[in-house]
Image (cartoon, one colour):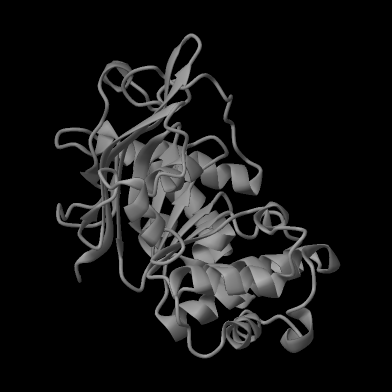
Length: 343
């Protein structure tokens, strides 16, 4: 495997609350290699978006303390000053957010907003910025780009605005695109078109993507690798096929169940110590509540990249108790993959 473009180690984001500190991201480890798509998946509030925002400092330092290590192409981002981060944001790391309506300025034409993104990162762009803006609109599949370039956001549909937001994100030809729930606010038909567009851009531009989603169908369609998060902590990671064929952590299994409507989750308060899923896990023992588990190989080969943060995968533990449930949700995983491939 080539050298990672992005490496995140032991990332923490602690939110200062009136009654104490909330560890919203607690010990996140993550690598993204050039040309691949890594998906952060988990329910709302699991810390996926905050993880991404913390990478380039898009959080309030007055409210949130970020620590750990974030290295992008060898540069330490958490130690970088604001001037350095401004040269990286939008230029080498671009963002595509969930709500395109809030991402676009209503008083400027979409062409002006794309031109601004182009000229901010390039003092002498070639070809002319307006021509580039039209080309970008064509790249993201917006119909009649030569006419639409002078349109205002309110004149476009939600799906069109999301394409414009993607054009702005691509304006500086970034190395990494962080896409935060880019399809969740769209109807099913438009979702499929945006996903198809992302697949096309990944092939044509060798685009590297860190994608945030709670939709397992999106994961199945786009991801090369998956990191599952629960209550601020990563609990499972590995190649998408391995995770879908053998969802190994009890929370990942519950996530698949919730997608098919068979979940028995009780939504109890996450455990304060140890494994945060312990209060809901049907396999939890006393050690789960007092000791935070390290990542262990799911298979018998210790070098495997499919890992789960669960004590049942340690030597001497009976992992079959957990893996028996994995077999039960594998059918749902296969169905998701089949639907994804058939779209």
